[in-house]
Length: 111
Image (cartoon, rainbow, N blue to C red; front, side, top):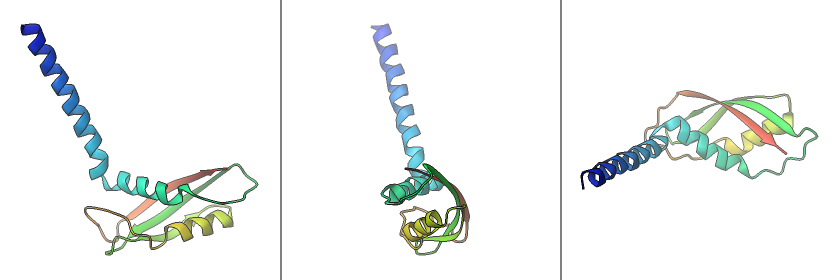
């Protein structure tokens, strides 16, 4: 009986630890933004010669919870316009909006 209760307590600790670990992604604004931006950029119809395009996107979130793209650092002009059109002034869901905070996100598009 004692071993059973010990196993039960250990299982409860593991389950609660996993639940708390999963909730941290939802409360971290940067991870939440990354997930939402991934969803916005997921569907693309870029026709490119290169199979692997990268860019560094500098953006902020305004008081209305919209992404405002400041710059897109890339060598490909099509990728730059694609990222700007998909992200600029798109609403995101955030618990706490820190207006004016700059975010830098690497973007990689594989064809």
